[in-house]
Length: 259
Image (tube, rainbow, N blue to C red; front, top):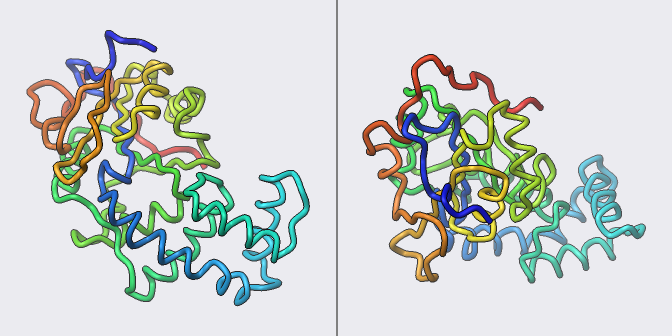
């Protein structure tokens, strides 16, 4: 695991910043205490209500592909409930959670929690031409809904794109960060990953990325070793000549991920 580059942002700033959600840009407890229970209660009703439809078939096929065994609705539901109870980062579960949450957002029953320092940071990076992306275990659809329904309004215009388990891979796998770098068209050393999870930051550093750990004041977990730690995103945009700026003559990547 690289040591000298971890947590160090280049003097001319990163070409793009990739942010985690849970515990980084949004509250860990909001996910655990609000979103997960909301989806868990609705796994069986959702499958029953959508029986025979294309989304229903997509979920069953995804569970079948993930397990390597053909699943009917009953067996798929049992697995989905087991994964939900154990917080397994299984793509079929994440897809179904996103579909359920989407209905909750549309009904006004849910919102995405975003810390107050996040919108100004995104606005600053946007003004500087720095790419802004999200990488979360939650599905891309769930990520869009999260940032589209916050107490600060719809923040999706401040983001250039999203990555999840199906589009990038597992978050503790260095190859996932290599894939994201290739998708964005930047050298890994020109990218900054910000997360609250040490294994994810270690994987990003192994892939050659810059890394910064987040420990929010309401987060009682131990510090993340081997990475610079911050309590909000504000320090990343307040350092003269660092994460808020783009070097002259080196234009930032203009587009989001190619989908």
